[in-house]
Image (cartoon, rainbow over all chains, first blue to last red; front, side, top):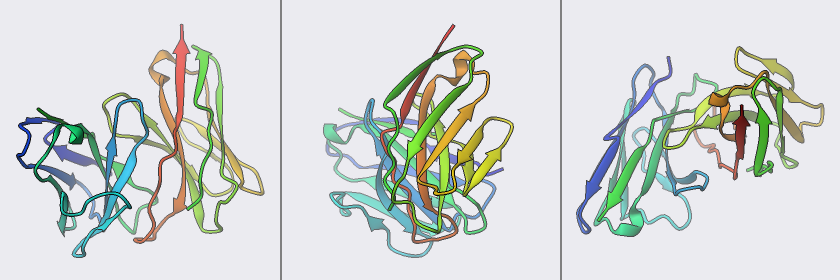
Length: 115
Length: 112
C-alpha cells in the first residue's frame, strides 16, 4: 500500500516551453501533496504544499507563476514548469499524505532537463 | 519547524551494525521523528517513524531518549545495498498544515 507514482519519469524539453509533471496516489486519498526539487548531491528542497481543492502554499523564493500546482482531486496533483530554462533542470519529487496515515510517501521522481 | 543535524557521511562494512544519530533540540511536543532512505535518482523511501522510546520494524530500529532531543537509527547487519543517503525528519503528523523540511542527510557508504 501507499504507492505514489509520477509521470513522466524523465523529460527533455527546449528552453521556453512548458512541462507538466503528474503525481498520483495509487491506493489512498492524498489530502495533502508536496513538491520538492533536488539538485545533484543536495538535499530535497520543498517547493510547495497543496491541499486538495485549495491553492498551493509556496515556499519563500519559489515563483508561483512559474511553478503552477494543481491539486484538483484526492489522487492527482500536477506541477507545471512554465517557460522552462536550463536552470530549471533538476529532479522533481512529489509526496502525498492522507490524514489517516502516519507519514508521507514519495514518488519516484521526475528528471527534467531543459536544453 | 524543528531543525535536524546529522553527520554528513559515515562508512561501514558489510555485516556491521550502523547507528546514525540525529539531533533535533527544538522538537515540539506534537512532532514525530521519521527516517527516510534515498538512493540516487529515486524518491525517498520511508524506513521508520517514532515518537518516544524504541520502535523496531523488519528493517531498522529507532531509539529516542526521554528528552526527545535526539534519535538514533540503527541498521542491523548492513549490506552493500544499504549504501544510500539517510534523512532524519521531524514534523507533526495528521496535520494538513504541517510540512517536513529535509536536512542535509547522512551519506552512508558500505564496503565489502
